[in-house]
Amino acid sequence: MNVMIDIQDLHKSFGDNHVLRGMNLQVMEGKTTVIIGASGSGKSVLMKHMIGLLRPDSGKVIVDGLDTTTLSERELSKIREKFGMVFQGAALFDSMSVGDNVAFPLREHRHLREKEIQEIVAEKLALFDLIGVERIFPAELSGGMRKRVGLARAVVLEPRIILFDEPTTGLDPITTESVDDLIVSAKQRLGVTSVVISHDIASSLRVGDHVAMIHEGVIVDQGTPNDLRNSQHPYVQRFLSTWFAK
Image (cartoon, rainbow, N blue to C red; front, side):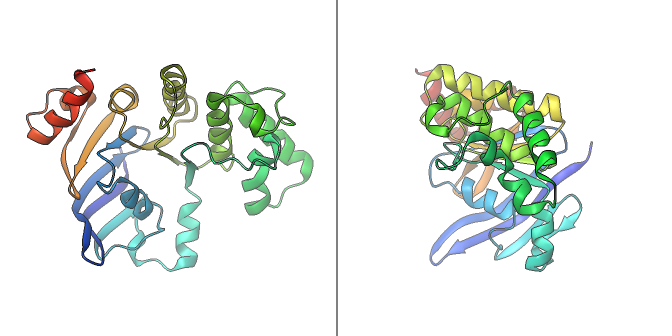
């Protein structure tokens, strides 16, 4: 099994705020890695380093064998094509139809005829049980459907890695479960490598093949969901106890 993203001794500060303090993590190809931790623990900063939106103070970010910390902005833009992103709340363009939302990356990055674009959009929507919704607008969709449209848009350029930024924040339990199923199904149907940023313990343990816990800028424990459940690390035990107490 190949390492798709290799984070090595990553450090990042913003003024006196030391956010990443020697982060080490390997994301395996074809698996779902969940990065979990409290708000402000550095999860989003780590994700921005993975996609090259931030440069580290020191350390390495190796994506598919390439050390992105040494690349030019132009070279980084090519690396970013390996990524699809599912934003918190789906982040769809409300003024565009579902079809135009999903087509947007194709129109920005590919030189295709309109007929080809429409065929690809229909194919990606159908992957997530969204047939015949191209002319509907995001405001007419449920929260779960918006997430599915967001995922269809994220995979329209056929990326190798999908990043999910807090995918279940603000969702009710039933919609949360459907989003979890969506993440699992994307891995199974498309064979993609997924990275999920979350503070939702139940969701993380459901979808993750590998779960890594961040605290104070480092990963304090990681392993399978079962490994985390049985962790002896005091912070992990305290974090999980808030969930078990419910």
